[in-house]
Image: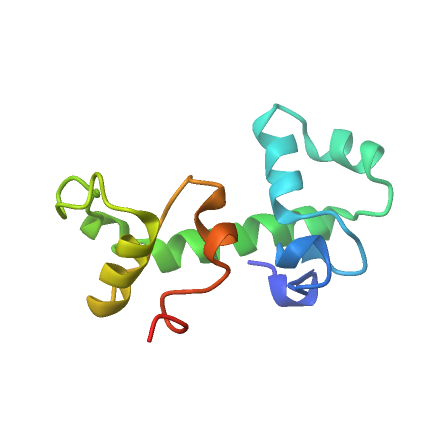
Amino acid sequence: MIDYRKYISIDKEIRSGKPCVKNTRISVGDILACLASGMNHEDILNDFPELTHEDILATLAFSYRVIKQLDGKLSGLKSLQELGLLHAKDVEIWRFAKENDYTILTQDSDFNDFFGFSTKNNLD
């Protein structure tokens, strides 16, 4: 498997810290979206001439690493309903997560932006 670290970087100043192909603003997510839409490597390289075949492979290797890290952790997911927090305010959820060492997975786009902090700090 290709060493994605040679091709992928994370810089909070570029694309808000999304993992990107080095020296570009093309994110791993952009490439995955292209692949998921049915584009093949050649199509992607034609649309993004600054990319190489290795960049695409590195994107897949990086994605594999992320999934592998999550493997097993996702089986322990609990919903807000299961935790008795279905109607809780966001700040109550943050506090619960911090006190119980939970990681929050959310699709609520304003959840982090609204508070601007993580469960690891700023709740004391």
